[in-house]
Amino acid sequence: EVVMTQSPATLSVSPGESATLSCRASQSISGNLAWYQQKPGQAPRVLIYGVSTRATDIPARFSGSGSGTEFTLTISSLQSEDFAIYYCQQCNNWPLCSFGQGTKLEIK
Amino acid sequence: QVQLQESGPGLVRPSQTLSLTCTVSGGSISSGGYYWSWIRQPAGKGLEWIGLIYTTGSTTYNPSLKSRVTMSIDTSKNQFSLRLASVTAADTAVYYCARDSISVVGGVVVAHFDYWGQGTLVTVSS
Image (cartoon, rainbow over all chains, first blue to last red; front, side, top):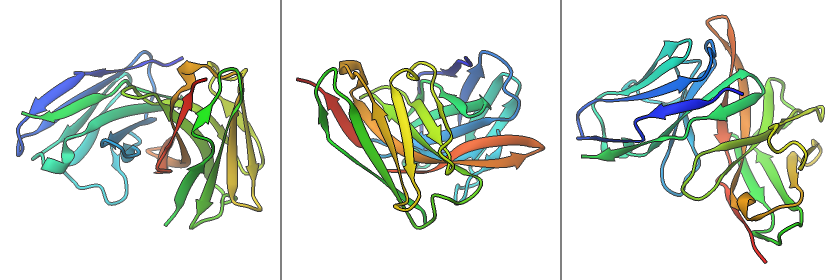
């Protein structure tokens, strides 16, 4: 079983600044890594898949990078609507998938 | 625009079976390249993938839930369903249905959940 560990648990950033969220896998997962955003009372929304491919209608300020076991979601020029919880997800042994525990991005 | 909608009882008694249905609109559940999953989220906690079904009826379940989970699909109704047996309070969660989209990125087959239902809260309590 691949365990995904996200850090930090909570990240406080001011609007207009950039945020860097990390996700570490317990073993190499090649390129099968996605990122989701979830706001209170809503279903998650996919932002990035395949490590760095932005999903449909996702703004360019969201970018993903990484390889092997270390992955990063970067959000540049934070907007008010970006403050939410972010989850990484791996499907290296598809269809067996698992999620990280989430990073809460809050306004500083 | 593909839409998914969960339906089913919001309250289930302990030791009973939880049953949910997901109705897909705006596209055929039989479309190739797509799979259909259930995911759950206890209040204030993270996401747990429960299982997946294909249009052929082929299934894969999370090993941690495999002994209690059954998924089925009805292509004539554009629906798929989840049954979780012998529930306890630990099964209380928001249950989501989602479409699992498979693609090739940089030569690697990757998967992501591109459409989700709004979620339905299921409480296990006597």
